Length: 545
Figure 1 (cartoon, rainbow, N blue to C red):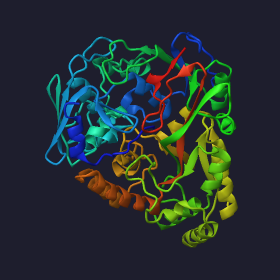
Figure 2 (figure 1 turned 45 degrees about the vertical axis):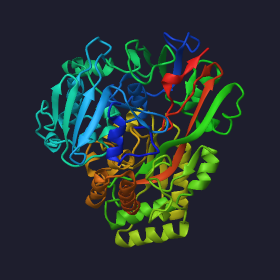
Figure 3 (figure 1 turned 90 degrees about the vertical axis):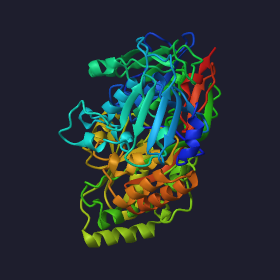
Figure 4 (figure 1 turned 180 degrees about the vertical axis):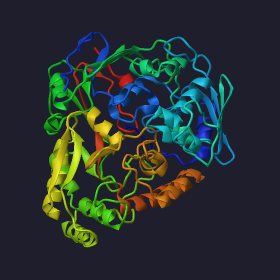
């Protein structure tokens, strides 16, 4: 899904608990124009799923859900953690038992109160595999999770580790130590839901009732999603504007043209065609800052010749070493991306340029050919190599460049495979129906290496239960992640995260490419542009004359 980060990352459970204790479409306008009062029109893409927080794992829906809902905690621009609906989150028994106290007085936009049941019922719904929520794996360390993943599970079955003590108290028992739990508690998966969400999930997904900075107004599919400032919001992210209008586009170029024409206020998706000029365009305000997003592409293990075995690993390594990341970054991204050196982003404390095996991320054509030949000795290559992407995004040029490098280096047929919309593309990714490699990437949900590694590559996140869309499974890697979550300090946890990354560098379940900057542009009337710890825009800070 995808987009967020931190500098003092997550494994230090005791430190964290101390911190928290007491703490296509043309996008043409409809009811609100870019010039309307202080309603900010912003670039958006059609969400891949109905607007249930626990089923939102991609940017189109993520931007919207972020503004509508408020969780237990929020994160500041440096990745610091602050209580939101939580009054305190305290830990005992080596991070296997948490007690959460809620603040009183919060309510949903339908007037019903936000209580302990609002959280626990939402978590149970998301974790239960019968409900097919994409963020189920976020609850994998809570007692009873495995029972909820059985094929014949009762849709009303709940996590045995969750207990509602009273309206403002939640008791959480874990099946293993999880020092990241208080940090995960601010992610989409952990947002509360009102009773109406469970009475009519289909209706709720199209017209959500929430408790965040904004109140939902309307969703005109493939056109716009509108929301207004929530006057009853009691948290840390009070909106400086009167509302947001997410204009849904199938082309970043169309959005950028609307921005330049004054028909859109803000975009954080700069098209390839404007990367060389947007910072010097005097008709706009431009922004280019370090960010936390990663760009990758995934070669799923079910493709012929790419199993999780020696042949598959050799071929993934060969393809990775066929790519000149530095040249592509210079010629296509024009100073808005840097070549990847690991699976994380620079703001994350476990990020390292010194990992054993990271030479597979460096351009080395001769070595690539050697590895490909070794794979051919195991099983001769046949067919073509393709990388799929959504044509309504900004991947076209870099995907084509990668395919050209692979084709020229390995002397095989390689091509890009455009899919018309994000919705179509993500539907195929989420359902495991991809018949080629595909573009991927990550914008963090919470400030931790756990979010990049466990949620994308741990076995608990595979099989449709999380972000591990390629169904990568390696018990050795899983064990390293468990050790990181059990570590008593950030420093010790980072060592385990890095050892886990060294396993990933051998297997390459996804191939790291670049870390993206936070880039954006607005009309001259807009002010207050800020970015969060992961490089995403802080929409509540936007305002205009």
